[in-house]
Amino acid sequence: MPDSSFERAQGGNLLRREPGISAVQQVYEDVRHQIINLTLEPGTTISKNQVAQKYGISPTPVREAMLRLGEEGLVNILPQSRTSVSLIDIQQAREIHFLRLSVEVEVVRVLVKSIEKPGVDELKAWIHRQSTELKAGDQSAFKLADNHFHEEMFEQAGVQGLMRLLDTRRGHYDRIRGLFLMVQVRRKTVIKEHRAIVAALESGDETAAEAAVRKHLGKSLAIVDDIRDRYPSYFL
Image (cartoon, rainbow, N blue to C red; front, side, top):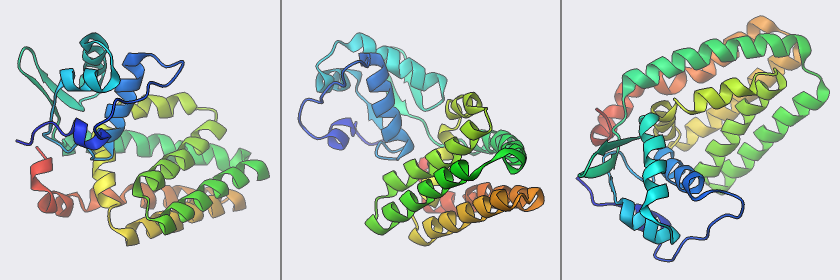
């Protein structure tokens, strides 16, 4: 089992606290980001004392942040023992994928009937951002732009709260998707599929929009066995 990589991930200096954000929230967001982006690999031990030292805070907010991550299934907490990044649970990933696909199909059905040019332009702007990050080779920024593209659709459909709800349960799915996107040609495919979704919305073709979403969201889990074979230590 690897030692804690929190210090390696963040570097050796004291981390800057963001103004207006509680210590609990910042630790939660930062550690969650590292888990989702696999900077903290599945199975890695996290030292709560080390995290507290890096932020210059007491262990109490760190414990609260870890409890939140535990509720999302992203860390395993053994009282009086250790906290570690959870291994990826494929069944949980499949379940949240099923839910997300069901919701996102309804989102595009709404947008086909309601989206206007400014909304289309916003989606195209996120696709352009993805193209920029693809050329820069920044996988983390690419994934962030990918998420924003989908968040924009949810917001335009008036159900942005559902995306936030899905976000709290999609950690296992997102890590599989992160492994999927490590191959550059797959990132190029994501951009192509996003363009197909927008084209269908722009033309008002509900059938094409639904088909494009189904094709897009099903890619990573379709080859999850291959991904697990390549990274066996990451999975349950």
